[in-house]
Length: 236
Image 1 (cartoon, rainbow, N blue to C red):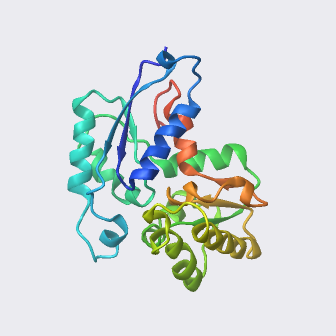
Image 2: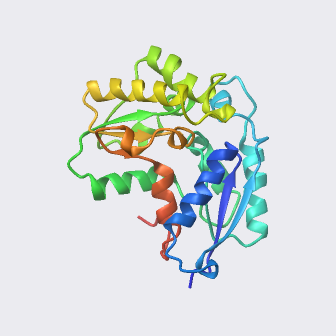
C-alpha cells in the first residue's frame, strides 16, 4: 500500500511547488484516490531568494528552510523533496536539522543519467545564475562535460525568461519565456550538448521535451519518480 507520508519543502517558487506535487501524483501507480500517497506541503513563498543569498546580496534562506522542514517533521513525514535546484546549495545544512531524509535532486539526476544515458559525455544546463555559481552541476556530474550558456545568453535569455517582467516568476509560462529558453537551448545544441538539463524548476514549467531535438531532463520529474518508490533513500 502507498501509506508512506511524503513532504514537499516548497514555496521556491509556489508554482514549481504545485507542479512538483502534480509530478508525484502522476508518478504514482493509483487506480483510486486512496491509492495515492499522503503528501504534506509547506509552501513558504517568504523564504529569501536563493540566488541573491548565494551571490551575497540577500538574506540567508537556511533558517526559514529549516523552519519549514521542522513543520514537515512534526507531521511525521518520512521523506521529502525540495522543488528548487538552487536551494540544494543549502540542503546539507537543512538535512542536519531534521531526522527524515531530504532527497537530493542532484544525486538522483546523476543516477538517472548513468542508468538511462550511459553513452552521453556532454550535457548542457539551463539554470539560474545562482545555481551555476554554486558549481553544483560540476560537483555532482563530475563524470561528464558540463556546458552552460554564454554570459550574455545567461543574462539576456535564461535569467530574463525566469525573472523578467514577462517571466516565469510573474506567472508567464508561454510566449516570451519559451522563446528565450528555446534560443538558449539552441546555443547549447550548437556547442555539442547531447542532452539538456532543466536545472531550474521554473524552466520545467515552460520548456518541454517536445520543444527540443535532444533529450530534456527535468530533475524534479526524476525526483518525483524516486520519491514514490518503496526503497531506502540514497544509500548509494
